[in-house]
Length: 368
Ligand SMILES: Cc1cc2nc3c(=O)[nH]c(=O)nc-3n(C[C@H](O)[C@H](O)[C@H](O)COP(=O)(O)OP(=O)(O)OC[C@H]3O[C@@H](n4cnc5c(N)ncnc54)[C@H](O)[C@@H]3O)c2cc1C
Image 1 (tube, helix red, strand yellow):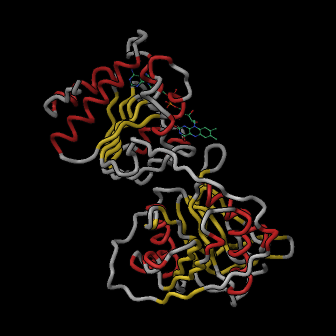
Image 2 (image 1 turned 30 degrees about the vertical axis):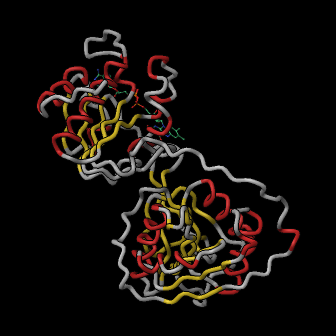
């Protein structure tokens, strides 16, 4: 849809699991709040499903001003086509200024369908949202689009890009989990809940859901960890160039994790670079698994301390750790790009530095 001042408010598609808003949904409500306050608009949570009574006010407790609920047995199980049908109908009738989704399987699919059906753009895999003027230079002159959303995302190669949708509304994006910190849940927050009556044509139900299974939850707790020790391809050799068994490095990282948890009483976790995960090293099977990947195509993390051991610091890794409060880099190469963003840089061999850190914290024996 072509943009105009008729478009108002920042919508968030709210995902519910086990009767609660998912954590990434609460994060995006916080991101929506940040931009909505800058342009004096409301944050609106959009909830689709069945039996949503208990969760309908939750978006308000996390920072929304209003919730639109479409509660019908027809939407009991998630299906892309009817869900996209309802959301595009809402968008065309109510005209939001922006519409945000979580960058996961559901949000990516649903957001793209809604953007297509409402003839607007979609910025995928965003890691931040800003409000900025967009200046367009054309042979006919310069045009300034006031107060647009700068949708910040990693580019394909080495840059961070800002995507603008200056002419069309809503401005749509999906946001990577971990990109914002949720606002504290506050039951005293006031807001309006409105019901939406969906008219979904029978042909929208192209499939029948017979049974649903939940995938087991990953035991890797990167999102909640306060300290992350991540390993990269530097585990393959020590500083003298001697090949090492990478399991040794993994065990040091594990000891450090245990020592941190024991001494500091906070959640610690082991992460990894994509290069290490996909290196196919037999010994690391079951230890350095895909769930540990940090970065553009892995997880965005926000620990208090991020220790990058033997990681060069490629942009695709760095975009995943930009919200870490302190970055400690251990690398034998003083010119490694990770040192450009590290708060503490240790030029050294991870096979020497990690054991020293473990020792400093009083050891971290792995329980048998
Ligand atoms: C579309 C796309 C998406 C990507 N997504 C991701 C992603 O999500 N996450 C990600 O991590 N990467 C991602 N990558 C890959 C990324 O570009 C890099 O290739 C990768 O991060 C490099 O991993 P690394 O730092 O472990 O390995 P390397 O770049 O090989 O670095 C190893 C480092 O270890 C150091 N070293 C060597 N020996 C030691 C030692 N004994 N002690 C200390 N230091 C030592 C070396 O000096 C070097 O700096 C992506 C790439 C693309 C194209």
